[in-house]
Length: 248
Image (cartoon, rainbow, N blue to C red; front, top):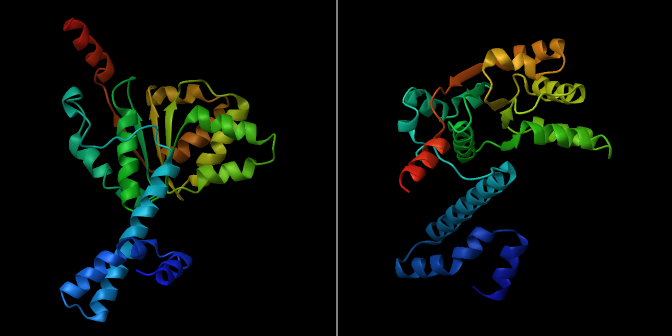
């Protein structure tokens, strides 16, 4: 590839072709490919490169705290968990249907792991995802009022195809918090999917929210199209720690 071609490919932002041009050119010569076949190879490389770049960008924007997959989840530690149901949710059909998921169970049972794994599957299918803790989201929305970026931050949490809200119930919400939480839930209602993880049983969720009227409105919208997954097992982290102690 000469400098002129390289410059034009860069100007046209055809980095996928630029990366493989020399290899494809050698291949075309050796295999005696037609111009059309050579061009088709370059187009396929460009398409593959753009798909990979888009996925990488979505993974970056998702803000996952770590990388987890369904295959890495140890179902042996949670024998009461319906494995088939989890794999069905991992198909992301719930996103196409604008449904929600609630993972409920004690700390250390893998709620966050499963939410991240499903989020990663969603990205592989072309969906946009954002992961955050409930407290982090609400703190950011509260702070945004000071610099007039409130609506921009609201859109940040409303626009993704899937919003993952981790650790609901870790702290009781204030009046300001509950207003913002309602804003997110109401705007996403039947427009985008949400995954919530919580160590509180569902019948305790009402106590998390400061305002009983808004609490009812939030819960009504969230549970209308929701898949509840209750994990009753023991903490995976505690089991690992105990096994280490037993080995000393």
